[in-house]
Length: 288
Ligand code: GH3
Ligand code: MG
Ligand code: MG
Image (cartoon, rainbow, N blue to C red; front, side, top):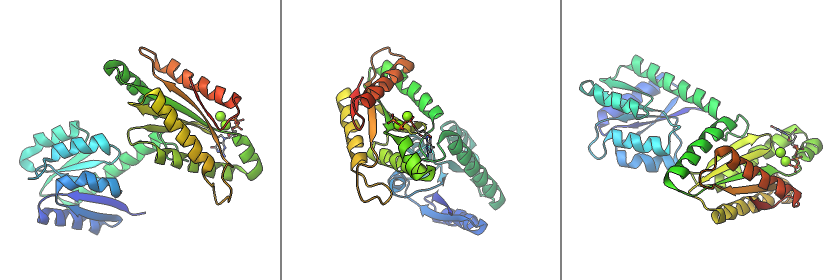
């Protein structure tokens, strides 16, 4: 798959030159956006592996745009393009989370190296934070994010909920159809979970056939509603060209964060609710 790069610069000459340098290197597909205000909207529909971002633009300051990108599209590395005289701004950008910066006039060899390094770093980061099979966050990221969200819920007295989701009789799927079939079910369940949640929710593969979902700003009633929607969607889904639904089902345990609770007891509450759902007959949702 070719690497997709978005060049954001209001100067038509500069953006053309940057795009040409990258295209000439080969292996990159380059798009140009001259209006900084359009970038966030573009990223919602188009997938980019890297962004080259001009610091000085008339409609929107590059640093403000960078803040926005880091808040909503943190996984996409951003390299700032700056005039030689504004290196302080580039330093500020690095503090805000830019992957790197290049100064104008941009030298082809320098740009190649910086882009290559930023892409490599993003790849390494992705490998360290996601599960290789489903592409969801791994357990380590889940634990970190849970700590963060528990801290936030405590500080600002905000609602926070947690779902533990386990595929029912998964061993039987493996034993009957083989592990590749089992793997494909895991991928499909992961995809459905991701599709059904909000962008602010955190979906992770907790272990084998167990998934976890952190739902910030979500009350118990809302969490149960989401959990039931997930459960029903999966139960109604036809997996892997199987003509009948109901082949794969999940049990869900839901817990709402209680003031001053630690992340461990919060997680344990959701886990106990999950076991209750298993005892209660599976393909159901139980609250802690
Ligand atoms: P329950 O309804 O009680 O959850 O039963 P279960 O069969 O789903 O639970 P159990 O813990 O007995 O079995 C889980 C199985 O998941 C066993 C393990 O081999 C399988 N598993 C774990 N990770 C993977 C994986 O990455 N791929 C595949 N194919 N199977 C996996
Ligand atoms: Mg299971
Ligand atoms: Mg299990």
